[in-house]
Length: 378
Image 1 (cartoon, rainbow, N blue to C red):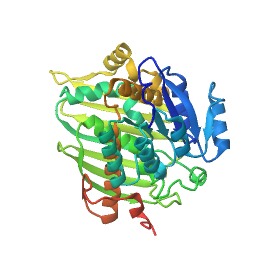
Image 2: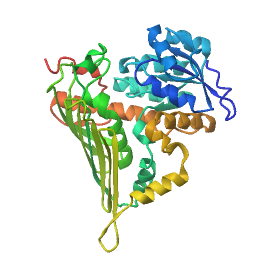
Image 3: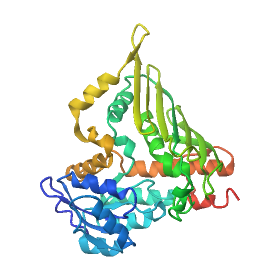
Image 4: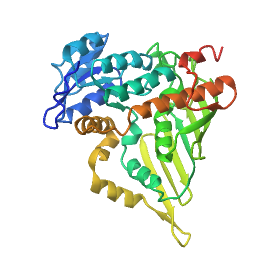
């Protein structure tokens, strides 16, 4: 069992990081800035990748390296296991870590299967261990404040929401690793590039999906999965959510935006080639529009906390801080285990709808795996 006796606010929580790929450097930078964490080991089947990662951030050069995650967990007995391996490996590592008493920081998606995601969620409830999902958009400044105001009814009834993620990737991206773009280990533009935005949109709108209707296509990229997907979700509160996700756009022009429309207000936030933009409006009693950007910016500066503006540069800083607080104070993380299950269920519901050519009820009751899409484009 992991040693969680060090989970007091004054003693650092021990961390084992499994997977030394692209996103792992963001984890190391976040860990390096938090006194409440201590990296004990990294794990990768390629020792050169592990050494390169540890050399990329000052202060970690002497960190232990393992090539077997079970050996690392058994020997180190960490409080937290951070999982940054390809998506198809998430389930087996997450389950083993939790069965050995470890809390988790788990990159998206939680798993590639509805039944496996449900099992991890149920295991979290049974053990009381915390899972912080890598749903980075929840940790950006201002979005939490807006979400609370929407939930409290400040803007009236939520009518609908929209997101688009036009995150172009060329063949070099997909050729960089054999698992990219595969149904078994990665999924396509919706599962990989768009899941963050889908999670955030549903979180902001304050209601769970009950039905998904979708189409997917393969337009430019020669991969197993889709490079373009579009879907409409019906939420339990009656609101509709429209989704577009694609990697078949210009790689040098990454754009993403989400919008929420309410009876008495609307929010739009996004990125265009790395430049953020924000527009929040409400309707005054006389019918005129009032822009609230300044109000929320001032409020966020005043409150600070895990939604500090440092998180805009590296949202993993907020995720780790939130997970530490959740362990020490025995509360749920902002992006908790249920959010991991729900996002997988929603994404696979979208895939299932595309496969069957009809709307799909959510949550999925009979189980569905990403590999059930194998051969869809053949």
